[in-house]
Length: 287
Ligand SMILES: Cc1cc2nc3c(=O)[nH]c(=O)nc-3n(C[C@H](O)[C@H](O)[C@H](O)COP(=O)(O)OP(=O)(O)OC[C@H]3O[C@@H](n4cnc5c(N)ncnc54)[C@H](O)[C@@H]3O)c2cc1C
Image (tube, rainbow, N blue to C red):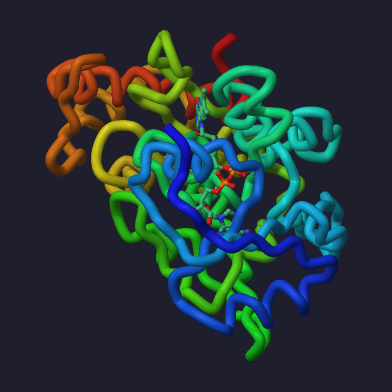
């Protein structure tokens, strides 16, 4: 099906894009187009104006600044996968999440900012952003507004972004003693997560100093497993400890999804398995 008619603008700078966003409310940003274009073609959305960000050069970068990683919103999954910086330490959960997205074409076009802003309940990147405790920098004509990943996702396809804002940057800390991992059971056709778990561990020798674990694909949005994290922090890492802590992880899922691809019971049961694998790899054990 063809989309309903809309106006189209391709600003050449961030300021130009922000001015366009400030001029109305029924406006959509086009990044990689991997979710927006199908939505428009199915006429699930009928914006008045589409603002194409792909000619805005200052939104695509990966850099290290003051012990933090900063990633521009227009950075593609393929860029993340190819980056040695992202394939290291805690950031590896992001590299693995990006590598697991869809197929090569989707990874070449889809962007980190598009994934986070779209907030699909089965998307991979949001779980990594939560596990990294990332800061998401929104920008409007009024300036920057920093939103923690924990406050960013508001359920099914909903985020804290205002209509006049775009997501400009994603930032997170790179502790020297940290590791990250992403585990996913894929839906065979699309590659979307039936259950996905991102984990970030900070270790002091064999002791778990910090642990953050987030699930995706199992309910209306991604979320952290705070009780499980609390059970692990301060303990000596062992497979038995992690297995015991993850055993009932699925019970934390409120209103688990059930569809043609996987039942709620399956998702609940697999939540603990994916979480356990991600935690052990993030902490430097298992495979
Ligand atoms: C065949 C197929 C398989 C897929 N498999 C997976 C998968 O396995 N895992 C997965 O996670 N995803 C998967 N996806 C979805 C894919 O990851 C999309 O790329 C992603 O959801 C959106 O990123 P995008 O850059 O393409 O954004 P777009 O499609 O351009 O935009 C998506 C939405 O976000 C908004 N937006 C985009 N950028 C910004 C910004 N900077 N600030 C504010 N709003 C913005 C747009 O207005 C739009 O509403 C798949 C998609 C396809 C087509």
